[in-house]
Amino acid sequence: MDWFEQIDGYCERTDFSYWSEPLNAVTNAAFIVAAIIMWRRTGGLPAARVLCVILFCIGIGSYLFHTHATQWAALADVTPIGIFILTYLFLANRDIVGMPWWGALGVTFLFFPYAYGVVSLLRDVPFLNISNFYWTVPILLVVYAAYLRGAVGLGFVIGAVILSASISLRSLDEIVCPQFPIGTHIFWHILNGIMLGWMIEVYRRHMLAGPAAGR
View 1 (cartoon, rainbow, N blue to C red):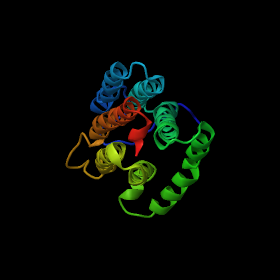
View 2 (view 1 turned 90 degrees about the horizontal axis):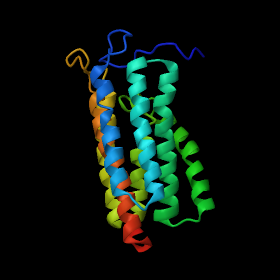
View 3 (view 1 turned 30 degrees about the vertical axis):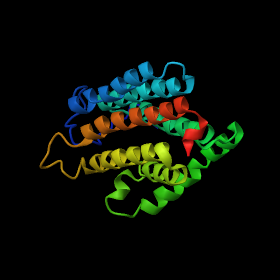
View 4 (view 1 turned 90 degrees about the vertical axis):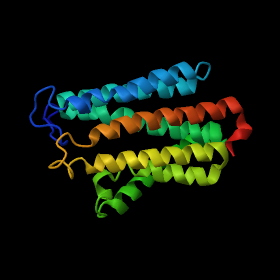
């Protein structure tokens, strides 16, 4: 693989200059602002602060991708996202569902075959196939919400709704490009910053409320 191969995957980009995606680049501030806000709210909760650090890295990685637009920058973009998903899933299994750490880790690794199955199912579904991997997350949030119920379940449903709107707008980027030249990817960043910050808040509230608040 040529790590410096350039990628044109978004409506806003018209060439390979550094600032060809100015709005896509600067809207990554949503992740950084959310990370800073939640860092201040999660004192005394080390695991939540780990999520804040990963969220901050998502903003940096995505900024690099929307400015450099290379293969290495694409890896810097998606790696923190994957780490956040797996870390949050592990913490949800351990601290909200109440599994022992080894059980939480084992169930977390089941995300890989689960994601493979969902991606395979959505591969030929119009519109959903554009962002088929990302749909694995709101689906999983709804499954966990149905099991957990209560305040955490509602929090997961709210996260799933925000993320579903975000994924839909991400998928519309190239479709609406002729009529909306800046594209819709900026809304993916903004809504995702809100959603990921919210998911950290759901975890924070649960941990402060105590184990009995999980269900």
